[in-house]
Image (cartoon, rainbow, N blue to C red; front, side):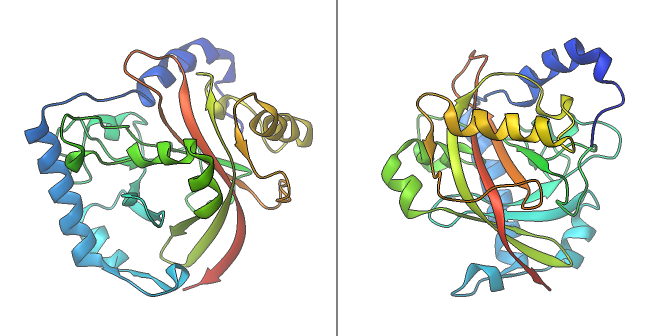
Length: 248
């Protein structure tokens, strides 16, 4: 997963400020985006009492946009969205919806250097924190900030990723304010690099953590990244490790 352009780290460092930025957009535009995503949810999601048994109609999603390759769901939050990955422009969905329409809400996305089967040691997933004067239209990764509350961190530890072939259940082990380094500028296939990253996620001051959860390269890390506030050069990241996988 190591980027062959690692020597251009400064350029990627600048890019991450953009890729994990914030949006303070007009409510009308955000309302349009939220309704668009809610419509997709109604059309393609079949709920179940156990989230790992939810069904996602990926055939319908592919007709909407072939760049859609996965779905993310976090119970007791508004995070219930398709995940996209552009084949040639990592920032394409920064301010475009899954229908490729310009909108400050953007999409939930990964970069093309990550495998679409979530088998990399670390998979960052990006999404905006969308603040409005009307919380009804807050969307995308805004609710990741619920993990700032230790009570929520304890009560809602699971994240679900759905792909056409499997469902992956993750358990959150840390949530923290992180610096603006470019996460994919590191080679997490190297055991020492992976361990150093994990140690930072667990030991950073102010982090909410579950130290009892065993985490290794084999279990893989999902790092959900959003912003802290307008103009901030830091990010809020929620980190989880794979605990269950079910074939579809």
